[in-house]
Image (cartoon, rainbow, N blue to C red; front, side):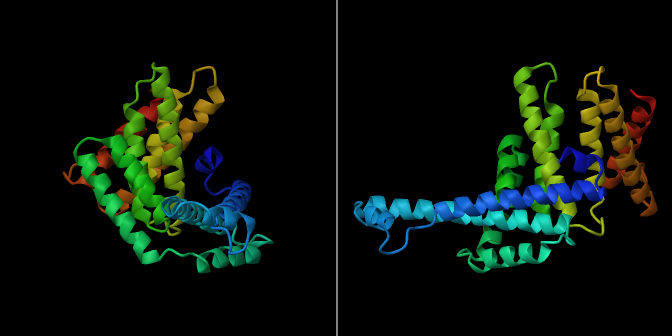
Length: 276
């Protein structure tokens, strides 16, 4: 994923990452099968039927919930694989796997989207109350329920980056938490970018710049090559963001939210070019 973030248009990286998603989908399908309610007449079903009614109902509900979650994960992984490498030799088989999983889903897509919308609202409320961790996990759950809803991924990325940049670098526990938030932000930006082939969501470039700049500052000085790669990636992301906003007629002095982030991007660009 880090390679994808540094070289988003490298076809070799895309092919390798697509293979990772296919392997993940296979694991999810295996776990989905393991958590399927046993069929009538099977030994496992007999064990289930011998349980007290309340215990049996809870067990069936738990199996159905787990199976549905693994089904969603497998569908998401197969969709990501097709986005990354649509011309793969096994693309037709991958589409068949995805379509079969979709057809067999017991959950209604509309209901999932409604749940995701409610979680986004919950996250927005938590964010207004300055509970960034609560907001992040509400958005993250929403992104899992509705993987095709771009705003869920953007909310995850925004909040994870906000938490990442607030972590004290000298604290070991904070560094571990920062690494987790960095991964969540990277994954969310990648998912959002995959849903935006025309690159209309310009804010993605600003957030990518923030992540690369943080990586540059967080990398120890002895790893000069890695630091330089991160610095150049941050410059490229901020430059793209600045050029897109300027082309749209946005100015850093116009007092709008976009104008403010444009000013921040220009300031960060200047510091990055100076190496400070």
